[in-house]
Image (cartoon, rainbow, N blue to C red; front, side):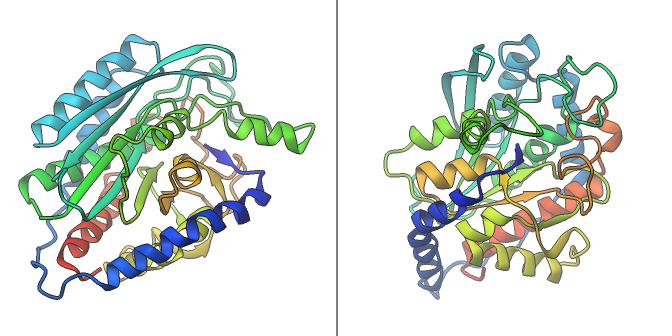
Length: 342
């Protein structure tokens, strides 16, 4: 993902998605008064940490690599063991370099027939080069992506485990996007057209999924994307596109996080717009979606943490307290939504 240079696209996307966001609010307000009440389970941070470490143990999860295939098989098996119905959505994406990427979006469905649904997602691939402006070593080699990719997936695996052990009547779809991080990264572009073209070299898996939904007419109430949610002292402001796609969802999630004592992570502050998977889901599928993403203030690494797109993105920067903060808030959203109290 990268900081978006396409501010003009914001208004277009906002207009396209506003009806969906309003529909989301209406549906939430019409939740039946007699809905079952569900207790929010405890998010096990050590479990999430182990899931991140397991992904990293395969090595960089770059499409076409052995590590990528091995990690895919493990993710599918793990999600199935939690009781999810899993779909492997295979596709071939073309990278900005012209390379054909054999890719797979992994879709785990809980209560697939339930009409009321929430979408959760993260990307499971890792960056093919260490191209941060701060990078000084092995710049042409792929990175482990413990945080950028691994952390969001680790949190969602623990969420999936809890959904299997503590079922509700609500439907939850966990979509792990592939080929998100294989985009073209430049600090400057010759023209706005070049910048726009570069934007669509990112999020290849979410672009494919949003235009080829796994269920015809798929309409979750909203979606939550997790990206870089594992580093110590992470800072999650209210990302710009999220505030346009689903402003009410942003406000409710951040207020809930503060009430739960995680306001030090979920900052009551505005963040910049990020070309991330939620951008394409909202653009193509018109599903209101928010992004929980680490955007440190005053960052000198294109708006991201100092480890972003460097060889330092390994297990040393992962903090299980951050994983717990994000995971516990996501679980609270799901179980309160299922209870009709979110």
